[in-house]
Length: 183
Image (cartoon, rainbow, N blue to C red):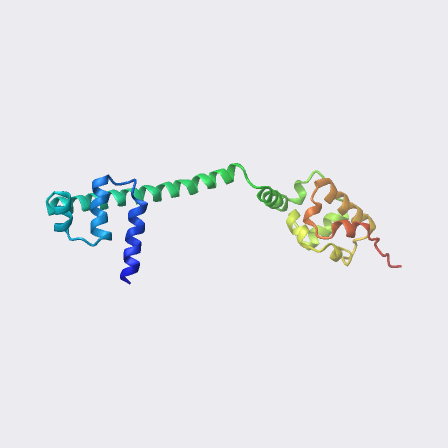
């Protein structure tokens, strides 16, 4: 365990080499790495043991202040990265934001005019937003009572006019399939 502590002390001392004066660094090296007593380090540097103790305390305070400063810099760097991300969103984030915005749009706020039959279908299904409409698989519309060729054409026209094809899974294939009319 002592070996780990010694390596840790050496690592932190090397990291803070530019933080301390030569005298402070020398005293810390003698105390932490070479395991000298305060008296031995004082004698080596030609000062009193009290001065070595004061120097050690000052160095610890300086190291603590530097560590807090680095922590604060790290915190501000994270905030900066967050702001950069908000100001310059990635293409994937732009796509997600557009998708969420499109899903929240209300059907009756659309520029597209729906027929009475289509409005009735939406009302029966309790669909108010484009997202709710997109959550229903397109194949399920073919099973709805009253949903015939005209309704399918109308739904295709709506989806294409709003440019929201990407919200409907399998839209390209579904729009080409004919509706089988029952006689």
